[in-house]
Length: 260
Image (cartoon, rainbow, N blue to C red; front, side, top):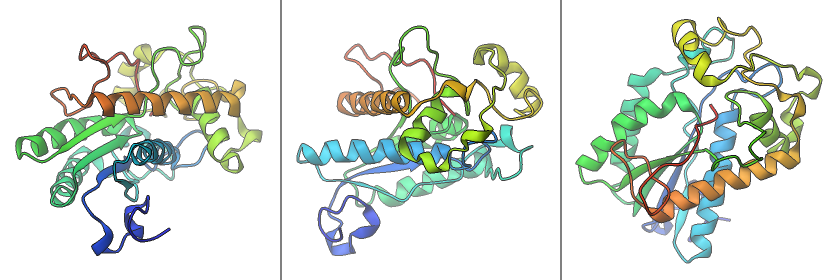
């Protein structure tokens, strides 16, 4: 579909662009274990952005999704071949200039972030855009609390959660013959080690979690939870000091953390 109302920005010739809400998938190109593609974060962010934009259009609000920003701050994965990280400073500048340009004609710009390593850049660039009176904000690709029940944690990287989502979105890109557990300790326990030496210093296969119990059914539940969380944040419309949209009429953020 091209022309007025096209869901993808790039499919609208300039006279048909209008003044839409612009959703920008922000991901990464980095290792995701021996079984998932390098663009996993970008795929997830794009799926969430597409779903949220569709909900907006269903309510009569013009909304488009841009091509994804597929390179982020992924230095913690740099020891693995295939990882391409542009670093926090470069990403911050990219987001700032992207927002300045898009806000010249957009009703609103919302970055939809699929990689935890991008948060520092977002938390710097988006408040600067807001200070310049530009209508910008961001939201994370996270579920609400316990989307799969209290006994199934949402793991940190390339484990059961992300593998399930990719099995739901594009099963042909998941190497089922390579599913293997990585380091299954809680992310709060691993974080000091990750900051000190990166992911490969903690686990050789790059997996933080255990993907062997993944399933497309769980992936559908998780993806629905991501979209519901993003929609709730967008509809509430209030942001914290980082420019991150919050969820709930009490202004709190109940999420448990991002898959990255």
